Image (cartoon, rainbow, N blue to C red; front, side, top):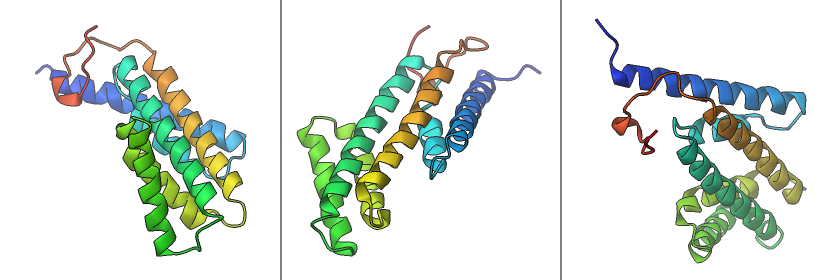
Length: 165
């Protein structure tokens, strides 16, 4: 019995995610970054069988991370720590993505902003910068891995791959 197209697609996507995440974590650990998990998350979330789709998702994630980290770091100086600060900062970060006309980055901007507000410690700009660097590392690995040719051509309508090859 021949494996189905969706099986080949699943294997190829899984291998790409695993390789990009492994590279991202390995480099993050080598560079002694604080939280390699953010590199891992970024690599896995944006990888796609289509290099074009991977780049689109990576750009959205980078914009969301930059906006969220910036808003979170800036507002951490003017808002007292607590649930109200998280609510206000997430609201501001997400609305800013709409003003900047990148609504696809809204949820990520809110998420990153909330993490910066919640976890920044005494150095919110340093914390925000590390989140951006770690995320960028994961995105870069996903984009690089996505450039490796597919092992075999498959139809992937159910996997979100919309690029004809």
